[in-house]
Amino acid sequence: MGATNDSTFSHFILTGFSDRPELERVLFAILLPAYLLTLLGNSTIILVSRLDPHLHTPMYFFLTHLSFLDLSFTSSSIPQLLYNLSGPDKTISYVGCALQLVLFLGLGGVECLLLAVMAYDRFVAICKPLHYMVIMSPRLCVGLVSVAWSCGVANSLAMSPATLSLPRCGHHRVDHFLCEMPALIRMACVNTAVVEGIAFILAIGIVLSPLVFILVSYGYIVRAVLRISSAAGRQKAFNTCGSHLTVVSLFYGNIIYMYMQPGNSSSQDQGKFLTLFYNIVTPLLNPLIYTLRNKEVKGALRRLLLGSRETGKVRASSRWTRGKLSW
Image (tube, rainbow, N blue to C red; front, side, top):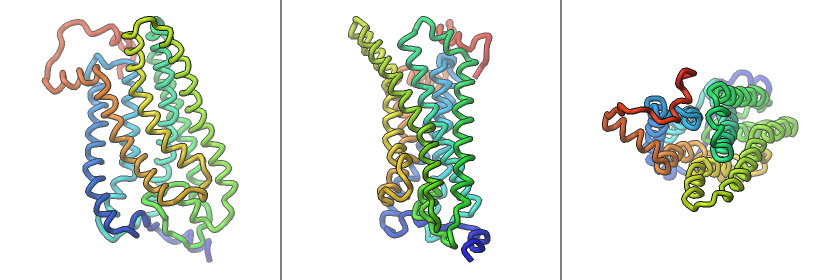
């Protein structure tokens, strides 16, 4: 009977915040403009990084991928959430649920690894500045990004089928606003220890290992910065890494809490709000962090908005793409 029900129903019900109708109205009023601003902010970062030759450097190549990830990640769940918040219909098709899960796991894994790659970029910029353009060649940058995408996709392809194939004995009410792995695991009517164990092991490789690498990289960066004799030089070095550190703190502060624990161990309501923060607030703030703290991005925005084009020689940093690959 349970197996039959699992194989025949064509949709899930995302209960989300349906037990708090007044909260749903407030969330809709907040999330709609936040989502539109997220699309605008991250699209702007991508366009500016592509169009302005001053930003044709490894750092902004990685930032373009980060903005694309944020766009894709937010768009995989927020439109469905806005639809569910706007009316009584809380359903999502089985295919839609599976797609949400695949994207959520895949894109989340890619972002963990991409942040580690960006930390390595900052490490080379601060600790080996004279060899930066040689080390961070276009070939290496493309290779690092390719590895990040490949590992994220592999993680998703490993965990998504295992999660979706768990027997649910006819249960199709997901106690969440999206088809997230812990919420789907909680629906299972069998022992899920094996699936949770595999998820935990993969999380160590996808989530914890990049974090350790980031911390080690910044350990070397701090040591190098402290050796700089001038206060202005130290301040400039810290400003170079400040945006990335802020993004890492926002990202890992949520993802570690959500995914380094078994599916049944955390507060479900608290998990919903943390996931919501992870889905909309972090992608919304990332463009602001990189524009408000970065004179290069603000300068590029100013040039594009004013429609001005420099006729002089492009700065030495743009030589990274000259005669090689063009992003």
